[in-house]
Length: 199
Length: 199
DNA sequence: GTTTCTCACATACACCGTGTATGTCGTTAG
DNA sequence: CTAACGACATACACGGTGTATGTGAGAAAC
Image (cartoon, rainbow over all chains, first blue to last red):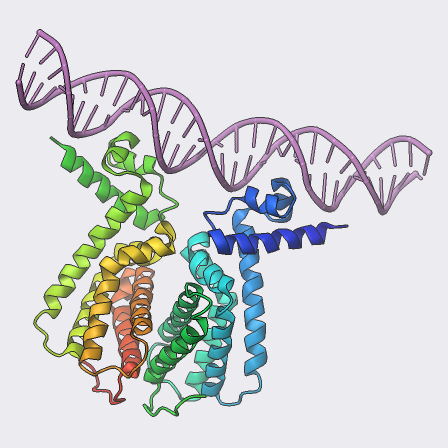
């Protein structure tokens, strides 16, 4: 019963190829060939190209939210928890495939609407939680919460993209620069304008 | 000599269809049909689908940067000029097609790299100018300027997307909410943390 | 133990969309 | 009058998705 292994191999190859060549630039024939099966096998396990991509995406996002949940669980203060989540996210984005798949290929491949639907389950939902808890703790100046969530989410996406296109040698530095700019912008959202350095 | 009229008609229809159905969802046959010509005419005036889209994009962006240049020319203070540019941009984004074409379909249609190349000429370049003048005037806390430009650019994109997906009846309110959140985030980038209300 | 059923794939094909090569018609220049 | 060129239309080749059908191995039924 090698079915699971086949499925995993297809998913693995698809992850790599979608990240390397993009969604449109990757034919299912290429995926099948690299996984050493035929297109028939791919269609047996996934209902189509888009479904395969969504599976790839889900795997990427699940890995992220588990990591973030683990690293923010012990932090009591919502603001500190959000910053911890940010750092965790930025670390994940240093993986070249993550940012490309989720932030770049995602909207392009699934279409704007469908992508956002998927994201609701993962990154977007996570940001929503953090922002709500920040507001609950009185950290945010009053403005429409959904709009705030949206801009925070896009801020993370901007970092993901930036890191995805940054060469391996500059990645560490870029990660820290992204962190600094995002932190500064987030401070702008606070009702109080005092900045506690970092951490 | 109806060549110019034909070209304009194709460009016009393409703008509408790309905005309504997306890049991938629009076949050149549909464009040709709506413009009451054949695909041959489309290929006569544009070298291909991507080139047609780039022409559509360029027209959208040119309209924007002219408007922004006009409305910010008389503002002396760089910070106020940037805010004036922001307002002008947000107004433009209330046109349902602009945000969708530039921020949503753009990267998807042209691919990440090519889109950014195109944007350098238009919106991205404009943001770059504003940020440089802000830094020149000492408004920005020291951090990597390119990263700052990038995040500001993406902040605008986030607003463009948000407004593109907002219904006509909520657009005015959403516009103002976007303005408020962006202004707050921008204040976070200032060296001084004092917020002069708005304006 | 042979038949049958189903799972996991492979093969073959129909359809759609792009791009390109070629054909046609009207206008203009010499 | 014809030769050339611009502005299209027509026809076709190619690549890619999705779907329908074929096949072989193993489990289940009897």
